[in-house]
Image (cartoon, rainbow, N blue to C red; front, side):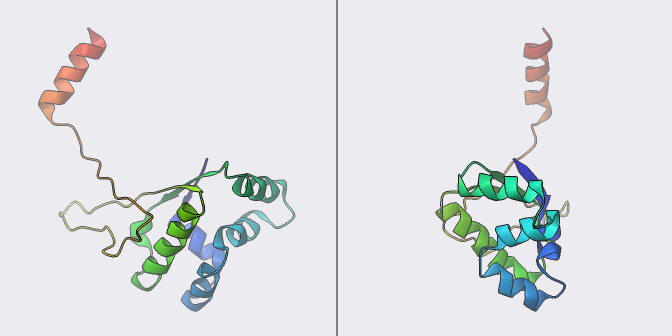
Length: 132
């Protein structure tokens, strides 16, 4: 697995939003590997091979901090990876105020799962079962 922040991926793709948008329309993860780890590095070679063999699990964290203009193209690019058979998990945190940070237009190849905390009764029951 490879875990990276969405912001780190985008910063490695270019200095401006227009550069990033151009790269997102192509094979952006391979470009990211070369930019972030060095084109001739063993890490880049390993990640490229794992990607081509469909053996790489991409864990993309903090998608909510991607700027509004880049969020839809970024999610579309991730959905393209999923459609091509790659394993991708992207996390989006919601704000504590209850405002939803999940993007409105989620591409069809991505699924939304919501993780919620356990209430006190369930936590107590699990503690009793686990600890005896």
